[in-house]
Image 1: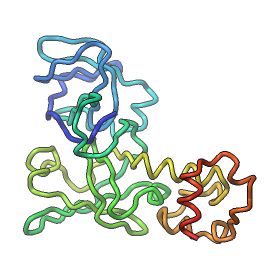
Image 2: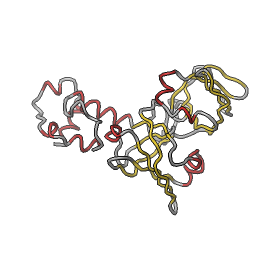
Image 3: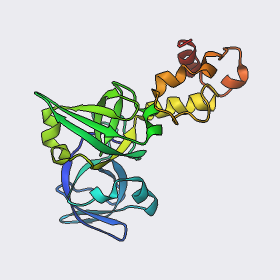
Length: 236
């Protein structure tokens, strides 16, 4: 588990045969988990100059692997007594998005990203999202993309200031939103196509099938917890 707060901008020494070598001031132990551009990897070797991690062929296909060169964001896994200043991040990349606009403003930068369209139902305004390992708050969502407001401190202390339009980025959606979506789909409150459109979670919950939900439908509720049931009933 991670927080989405970058510990260090480290340098990729080499990426060959699925082994990623990182030059870093951080000293991990073999077996430690480290998020590199948001992807959770395991340390398999340590050296004076840094450490090595292994990227499986499956994982390499799910991330913007072309960015695992030059400089990268790294974050060690949280300790039980760590502060949680970002949000709960698993280090499992859900989607790859593309930066379609970068708009500097007076005291912030608006970063607009286009994800796969079916991902937009899990991306909600004012919700949390992780981009290349960085915890951010979603400013707005449209039918095609979403935007993030990046403050100067974040721009200066991450690699965001080097990003250009067209760059692909790793996206991890909020685990809480994903969990709610999974429960709703499992209970039949939304169809199997949930996530296939861009209406967002709140809109999907207003689907006509959800409106026809009855609290007496014990079959739909048999595996739901009381807190889940209460949350659902409060919406109707």
